Amino acid sequence: PMPTDQLAALLARVPCMSRGKKAALGLAVILGVMQYRQLLKQEAPNVPRAMVDRVANVSGEGDHGAKEGKINQKSRKTRAKKRAILDEKFQQKFKALLKISLRDWKSLSKLLAFTLTLLARTQVTMRMSSLLGIVTRNMIEKNKAAFNDSIAKLVVLSMPAAIINALLNYLASSIATDMSENLVSYLHERYLTGITAYQVLRLNSNITDVDQRITQDVEEWASSAVLIFQNLVKPGIDVLLYSRALTQAVGLGGPLSMLAYFLLSSIALRIMSPGFGRLTARLQKLMGFYRFLHMRFAARTEEIAFSYGSRFERKTIEGAHMSHDAHRRFLQRQSLLMAILDNYIIKYGATVVGFAYVLSRIAFPDASSGSVGVGREAMDAGKITENFVRSSRMLTTLSDAIGRIVLSYKQVSVVAGFTTRVSALVECLDNLERSAAISK
Image (cartoon, rainbow, N blue to C red; front, side, top):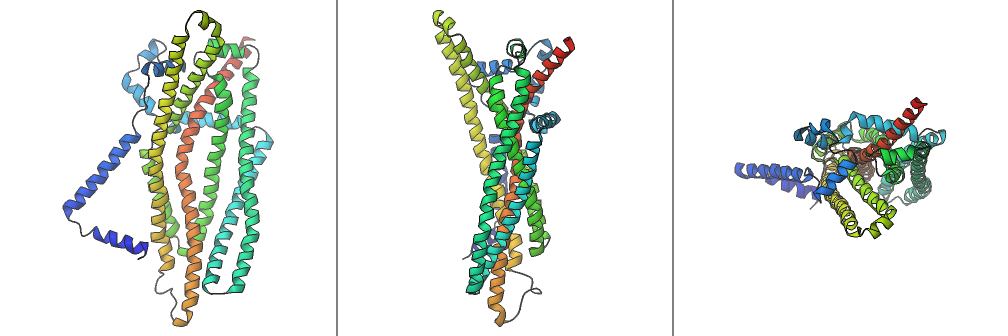
């Protein structure tokens, strides 16, 4: 039996269930969703607690005076749970970093070329979907001449497709490199001038891992920003073009049903998702503190050796590493739980919705639009197969495009963590530069 028959048989059993069984099934589903949400919303581990508090104090998150001491515990928990992506300050900081990293014409021209290449890739993919449908139709109709002609067109079309895919990877890495270079150059102009480095490292206790922010965080931020652009622009183009093509094939209801499903899915995923931006920022903070302790140990090797302080320093460094490792494993577990939910809702759920509604209109058209007569049976089968192959590939690409847009919230949350760290250093350097200008 076909998978659709098995699904129909499975769904047919549901109305036959008693009311008690239906209520029990619904209650089990609700309890399962609530328990799964509790797993996703659990707090990050504080191992060891003293080390986590020390990192918070060094990074400016602890209590620094009587003013912050008046903040009650409830408001702190509420503020800690607030996601960076929902903060308007994040958008301002992200735009400020984009203005710095895309300040030259070379980066902007590459960004424009990248956008046009994404559009070209969508056009080539749509053309290949149509050709594959024609190839399948010619095979069913046993038209060898047309079959060979379509295969030759596929071979020719695959050449620019390969070039476009390679060009996209090159442009993405090149733009990320340009953005990273511009931002690092901006930071070097201010950080490596006069006594600014001394003021940041010795007089400012809020930023202790400047080296990590300038090197690793800036590079990660640039790569994540380009990935967000790619995951929004390319799927956006695909949604527009493939929705238009599917509308012509199965009507407006097909794309609208897919969009409605993904809209509801995005709301559900948004409610279930943990704060990946906050978790990523904390991971980088713990890593920065761990590196800072190693740098301090290397700078004070002689003092530690003659004062027999190696045991204390080892305990401190291993505690910092334990905190970083525990948080990283916690983030991996949360990512696993969220990936299971993403795949179930976005990938497989969208496939079921698409095949149940969109492709059923092709395989089972209305009686008024179907052909009549035995003499056209082979032609009808070939045409249905061509439409099925073409529309199924378009549907798969449309589902993938909308799914990437829906799942882009995770990448935005990750880049929010890097944005917070890099923008804090930029703001610190800008404030010192303004203070120096005023003092002159």
